[in-house]
Image (cartoon, rainbow, N blue to C red; front, side):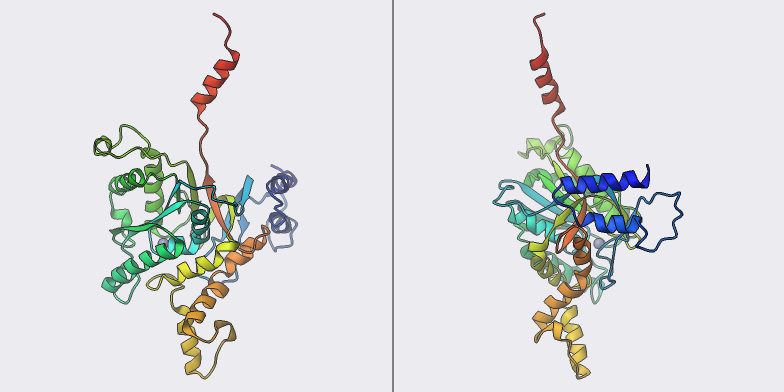
Length: 356
Ligand SMILES: [Zn+2]
């Protein structure tokens, strides 16, 4: 495909899908050579580097590839998702908080009943392995509360060892929960993310992908039905990616500007793991010991924790959002509901049938 054609299609789809003024300057800017590149002119770029202030260790992957039917999802008035159920599934207690908490909070505010499901025990993040298990168990519960979830679950697989788990067991446990909770929509790590160095993320994505498909099937785990469960039809998936050298397909950007303070508080709940928690108060105390203070951290530890997360750790979400005309944004590979092809065929038959 010619570069001009690719950009033209990107710009056209952006305008059609709600004034994507922000997509185009960066993409066009990169292609026009404003961003330094040694790419010879005979090559067409297919991946776009994501700007980063380097204030956060891994908030955004290094590269995204954009689909030309990309949608910017904005706030939806009223409660359009009333009666629907959302499962936010994460390998670790800081995955959803860092990469998708704004979107989960938005969807819950728009009517979803939310559940947070953690798969590992997070033992590798804490003063000792034992403390890590306990602290992250508490954190997962607190993060769920800050998100507005109805309940949190943990499966307690050993941290960074989930590739030693039988994926069939992991998947069957998820199928049980999806059927029990009647899940309509999931938010999870992309099972096809490139270059993710964390084996737990890949396992989580693969297990969730299979569970979404099989939860609606009539022959898989039939004892569930005899015990009273109903099939669950997961129709929407929001997949996010984390990886230091990452490269992922993005077709949906969610404007989380209205939910950024909630996202900050969800991250503050992660005290045992991740870059947030009480990092702000620790920096404030360190400076006070040197007889200094950083005005942006405020006058107490609570303010310092909030400001630290919002100013430093959310800065990449802010600079990413700017490209799409949002104050803050999160990126996803979104998979929506499949149309019922049999209904379509029957409608066609009804409209075109003639006397035999
Ligand atoms: Zn993780």
